[in-house]
Image (cartoon, rainbow, N blue to C red; front, side, top):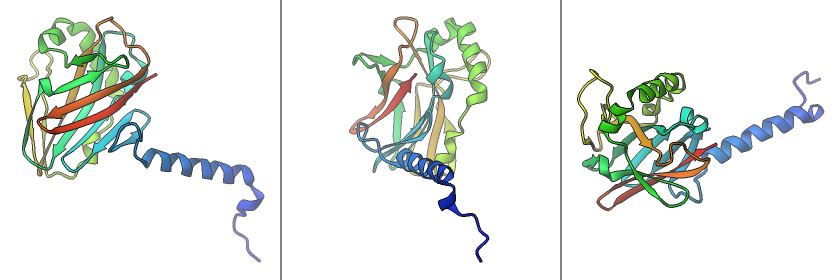
Length: 199
């Protein structure tokens, strides 16, 4: 006589298990609207092709975006040496308008809001570096709070090195409407586009 758990007699549990399996499979599938991308959580997405690997996470800003500032954690690596400059990173709004990274000057000018954003987002950090198989990591330091280091205009990645850091965008209207935005990193002939879905 078999004393194990009989799934057939517990259809609700079986349905729940199947649902979880389908969700896990869907999360791992490539996004048909954004080639080479996969969802890696509720607010994390990965882009990976033969040239560049990018992971972005925006857990706090996905639901908290009623201020001018949007925070996206990002990490990047590449199969060849690349110097990626701040003007090669942008956010495309649902209406097609392209926004560059905020400037350090604007970031510092709104220090009360940006400091509060960083403080509130600290509990939702995603650890995106874990998606990379690189021996070395460095910071992409486009922004810095007072007395927290020097700001750079570019970062370097290659086969053995990845870079990670915070990307800040500021809304032209003062708030961010719900919808799907696109985080774009474009360097020479390499282009990565990742969906950023605000609720």
